[in-house]
Length: 298
Ligand SMILES: NC(=O)c1ccc[n+]([C@@H]2O[C@H](COP(=O)([O-])OP(=O)(O)OC[C@H]3O[C@@H](n4cnc5c(N)ncnc54)[C@H](OP(=O)(O)O)[C@@H]3O)[C@@H](O)[C@H]2O)c1
Image (cartoon, rainbow, N blue to C red; front, side, top):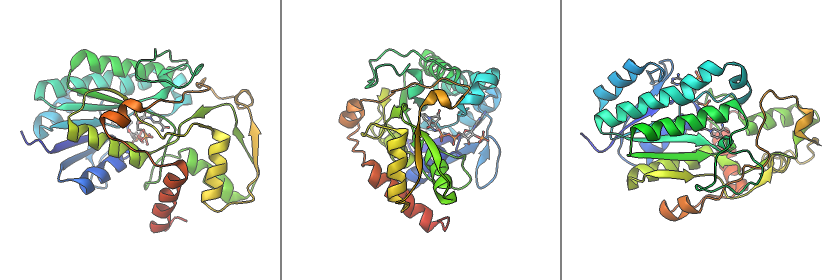
């Protein structure tokens, strides 16, 4: 088996696109980029189809599988519970099972939503206690992967943002849309976390594969801030100086899913073991701005 074959599940999503980019750019990996439906050079793979997962892994025999596929709509996960569980937990088991059979490493992406958000400053030894269904499914996914496989790395991340073509709206894209409209818009002051540029998380996954790292890692930006503080930085970097952003609190939003109030991470383990140096939020946003300019969307 080649030690440079990487299979990416969920390649059409934000992180999936960044993973494909980073692995193609930084080294000479042979990539199999999979997505729910085929197109744009992506191979169709529904990770909830156990046989198809087994067949795809068996045919490509990757040295590493990176799972960026997920049911990521936190509010919809409260109502579409069966589908959310299938994608975020059961299917992770299928990937782990196939990885075990064919001798691949699995790098799985998880979330800060496995925590209740009461204390913040969570590290890899902190006890998970999800308060919403999405977080429960993601925690189940971590556990099911562990039950099948030792050659496993789980990267928990949070407030993931970035630019890539055709992706779902992330927080930064939503704020930019509002800023462009010139209208006043509300942003919460009581949800606190560490914004993470997807390009940086993809780079962390590359390091995990290169170093053959195993275990649990918290990977996020190093700055902790409220969504409002983050929105103000976005406005500044993208040149909307006079932006009208209204501070509000989460209880006014009527969201279906409860969210952890402070799910900030300590990422010392990733910094030390993977030699990760995360850039500041302002530098990360500036890079995203350059990418959007280059793509002609701003
Ligand atoms: N976004 C955040 O703030 C955040 C925070 C913490 C952790 N994470 C985690 O980071 C990872 C990547 O997130 P992201 O923001 O890149 O998500 P994303 O943009 O929503 O990408 C997820 C991709 O998975 C695909 N997918 C869904 N169901 C699938 C299935 N059954 N089989 C194959 N592919 C399927 C989606 O396709 P469709 O679009 O067609 O459904 C989408 O392309 C996820 O594990 C997520 O839980 C995200």
